[in-house]
Length: 637
Image (cartoon, rainbow, N blue to C red; front, side):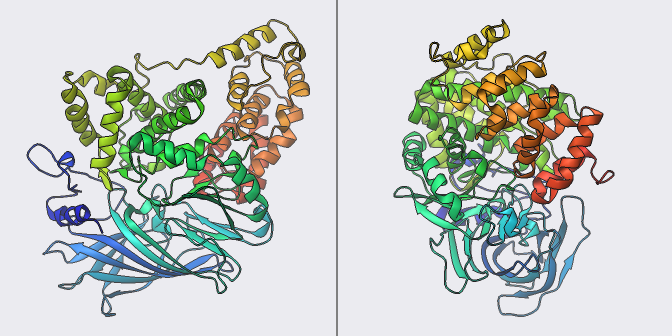
């Protein structure tokens, strides 16, 4: 445990819900620690807080449960007589102290998405507790897959998704991003399977199904992760490698060939990679996100295996989280943009360093398109205030805040700062920010203080309060949003204009006119997104007959094309779209397609029929969103 982290723990008793950071950067001018109120945990860390976890677990695919003992070292105030943890659906068998003596505990009332408080009574001098428990077969974080739901169809598969507050459904824990702890684990799985965690990992299957893990850096609960299945490993570079099912490993290794270069580029920008190893595991298709930045082991969707390395910006994004998010973490889910906005900015810089400014500006342009669409969708709903960067999610599921606002509006705010101060000064600020705040949490208000002191004042520039009001606390997209410039997209627009004017697509991309010969998938996505709303099914058939969008191997292209297929009733695409929806669990793709279908009665009928076939393949993170837009509870097929 680092010295600075010990000081962090000693400060926890200072005042209600304070997470104290040891460096002067994380203290106010009068040396008071920053105050944090996390509405999404029952924990009271000012009284007692976990500091280390020893987890001993057994994975049972037959019952779809994990039986385990979670033993915690705790730090407590002198007058603390209890510690409160978060649980959801866990069956608690017993709680003991460090000497094996029983402790009194109580499970409180369960609330929607919050689960229940587990309150453990503490006797004097107790600094360790052990909780024996079993998970529920329906635990929200756990995805149990049958062999038929995997790529190789050989063995069952298990993976977890703990973000935002689902760790409590598989480990009793203080489930707040502002509370960090180290951990060791021993996990027993069926023989022949490999187990991996967000920790030091094996590279070969053990003979007896027994595995041990260590994470010696303090992490928040949402970064706890476990995967179990028929998994193999291939080395990429000195610090990088990839895990996947045997039939996928070759394609994954090819796709991620630049991982080591990405780590090198990231270090050149913002300082040393502090997690030792950076590996990626390609999960089965039901994984609900593009990626999850679990330390030392990024979880990734197979939808990025396009065969041409065109979607590897997702890996750059998850790698960037090793600094923004994993190293310096949003203190609450109201501050989520501090994780994701920084990460998108960092991702763009990594991609620029590796592939050039023209390439990264295409990514930025696509993100601006997605941001404007997101703002439009949110403004049409019940919470237009969700277009603010600093959120107020009290009483709501924190997943509600995981929109493109945090990612892309956050990115453009940071890009605006770069353009105002110049890249050199902004890079100096960011590098110091990650170094000075490493392994600590950050609030929006504390970030603003550091920004004022270490960027504005340090460079003799007056603090701009209007900037914060418009970008951080204001709705929508401010007028001074930077505009990415992409000559490559300009050429795409020229082709589109000619096609709309009546020039056959065959002529525009023929060998005699090779404008599109070297288009990347990003250019094709831009092309598809900007097809005219007035397009007919006949025009779609013209494009599809020649460009074969319906059967593209690129999931981003498929998703954009299928949205048009629904809008324009292009029935030749429906069969492949249904197959895509059944075998793809990534929420980014599911939401726009189902969302487009439910706009008409015929479309909603089609959506319900597909969802009935596909729902079992989706993770809770996806079904919890889709059930709402389909009103599934009232209309199951």
